[in-house]
Length: 253
Image 1: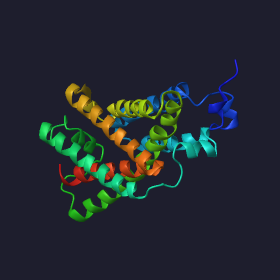
Image 2: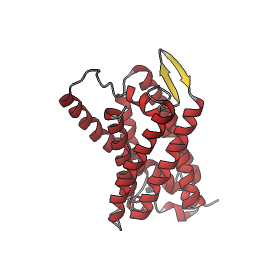
Image 3: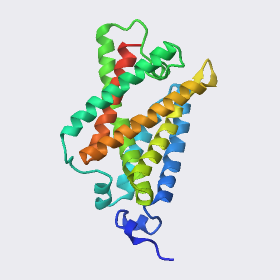
Image 4: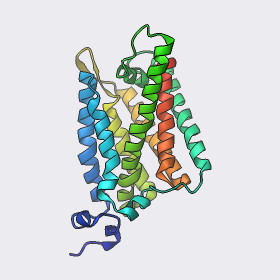
């Protein structure tokens, strides 16, 4: 049976002989990237060695360039924004969302490790009693890193090639729900399964809130990809979210 050629012009010739750009390919991508990432993040939380997390983000960013041709990369939003005003709105919205999530966590769980930001802060290794100048420098380093690696890697992957794969089969709306679900579940490794006092714990209700929050912000990221006409809208919204989260961890917890 001949493959559906309507999908093939977005994949590079070698891969177009192996895959169609459809929901099966989307599942394949999620499996080969998200499962190893999930394991690596859990291992990093247990060992405090986060070196491989940057590598998985770089790999995520490279996936569209590995599989897609120039036309395919344009289709996932690797193009100039059509409406630049949405980039500013994306930044403001991402920042606001991160602060809302901080307020929710602090109101419900205070400074306990059931507060998602409090647990994530553990990985930042902010020294106790650090002076203001050194704390500012550390914040700038963490903010720059957080605004580059995961926003670019995750958006090119989830809102980019994964979304486009499912969109070819189910349309944009259902595809955004699927990629948001994959994004949210993957983030259980960042908070949900927590490693404390050399033991693994699972916080059921906080995890549900966290996953739903990640699902909603994922939809927000896609909203700005669509509105701006470019994946850059999603990247900027995500980068602003990370900036807000890091600021909350450094100065509000």
